[in-house]
Length: 258
Ligand code: CO8
Image (tube, rainbow, N blue to C red; front, side, top):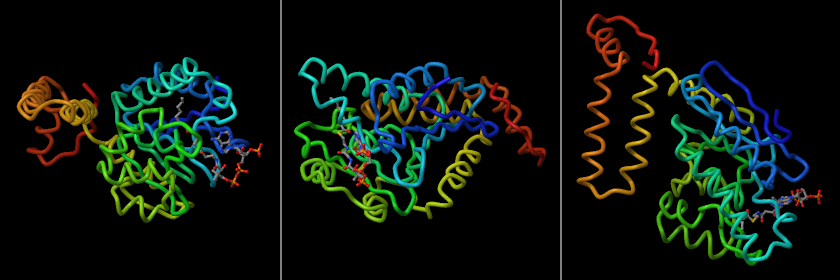
């Protein structure tokens, strides 16, 4: 059992709540270690989608823990950055889709965690920002890499160079989030979206995630060839056979992930 993570199953959807409300869910090495363990043991044959949120109505994650970072030297800072970056990479490359339900502050490492997720939806009181340069550091959990990919280089540079947070409506405008919903509805809306994903053929969803992520880093010809191989492998699944049979016979089929 974890001290700062709450884990639940909602049918085929897993819900992970980061819970350190006294520090607005700031990420220290204990929490990052727990997340690492959770992700290492995540079974995508049991859960078809993961929703990550923060405890309470005020903060998703208010950043990496400043009290832990304050006395680090260069080597320890690099090691701490490596730990966070490796945990977030596990989020990004988790077999199934991950939705960030951003319920308030997503600052520094919190914004970077949201960026590592496949889809972000947020509450109307959410605030996003990369305030690191105001602390004498840079986004160190891969924010310089992922923010530019999400919102474009100019907007990423503005957010990172000024450290100024933005509100949920601006986050929606620049494409940082897919949707803004009232705070009280956030978790239900995130779980609804997750359930829609979970109802699809899970191996196909996983293959699509892999193609989109891998294709981003490849040139177009390689990305298309990668997709083509993945497309072919879909035809070796029971879900493809049953899914197409059910369509042609005008029936419903519950995908088995086989
Ligand atoms: N780290 C540690 N403690 C925090 C953090 C944090 N990131 N954020 C909030 N807290 C604590 C506060 O110190 C306070 O504790 P206490 O009650 O003991 O005084 C408690 O949470 C409540 O916070 P506030 O009283 O400040 O609440 P407010 O409503 O007044 O303000 C804010 C909320 C605006 C979110 C404010 O707390 C704030 O600005 N927090 C810091 C935000 C920030 O700068 N985040 C970025 C941190 S740096 C980072 O994430 C780098 C990631 C890459 C790391 C690379 C490693 C090398």
